[in-house]
Image 1: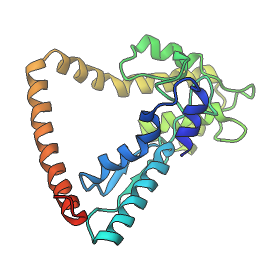
Image 2 (image 1 turned 45 degrees about the vertical axis):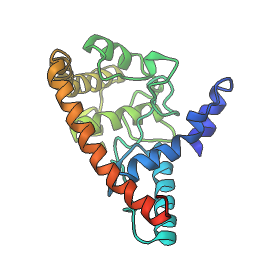
Image 3 (image 1 turned 180 degrees about the vertical axis):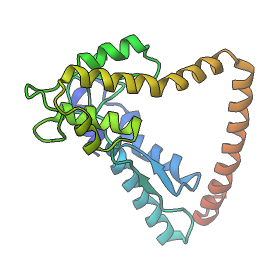
Image 4 (image 1 turned 30 degrees about the vertical axis):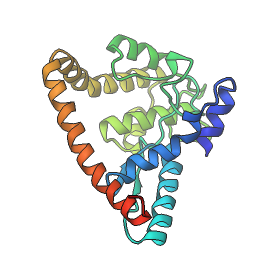
Length: 223
């Protein structure tokens, strides 16, 4: 698995069982609830493919049991790259905090991170993943939060510099996150409601999972 190779390579002193068994755990989380579509980033597609392999092998050996899921990956936001290193995906575990936008970052922090984002010296907003990874990444981010096409973005910023473009991307992200952050704050200030929601959710999840698990055990022969 590419994720294992990448993370074990970057953290040689911490190659643990949790990292090694993560793909199997992810497959179990998907198959337990008979998911048809799994919303993931492009880097997680391999894990969904493994899940499909497990489902197909089990169904072939024991009869139709699991739904064989498909990955659901949006074009513009399927793989968002780092702001400081646009050749690698944006990751919450990045050692450089300026490389990633967190959902609870303040507007000031978000603006500062985008202004520091790595681009190139051409100063032309143009989609070119190979030669302009930084600008292409910013265009993908802007497209994912506004719905604008690459052609519309290129036309809008024709003749404008990277400074204006970075500010526009930051403002769009800030606007998109504003209602999410407001709801997040509202929920954190209502612990009774949160407890009610996660308790009901756990009960429902347990009900669905136990039904699938019983069927699996019956077919395998586990009493």
